[in-house]
Length: 55
Image 1 (tube, rainbow, N blue to C red):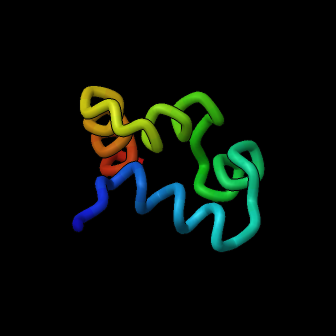
Image 2 (image 1 turned 90 degrees about the horizontal axis):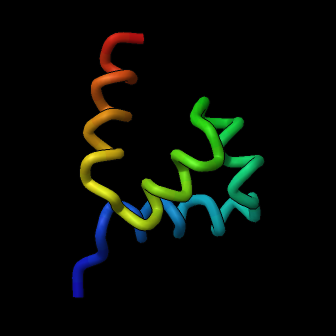
Image 3 (image 1 turned 120 degrees about the vertical axis):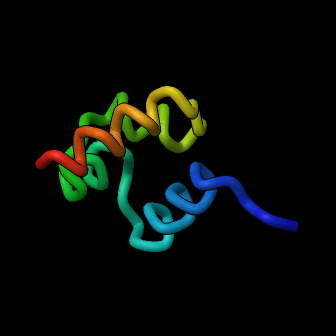
């Protein structure tokens, strides 16, 4: 059984005992973006990748 990118992000966050606000601050995105990434909204993930690549 394979997991989605969003599921893997959530596993990493929870394994570090962080809530969404704490983890989003740590990785430099808003809590809303993290929530959308965890729910794996592909259009949001593409926006995140493009922003990260240019930073």
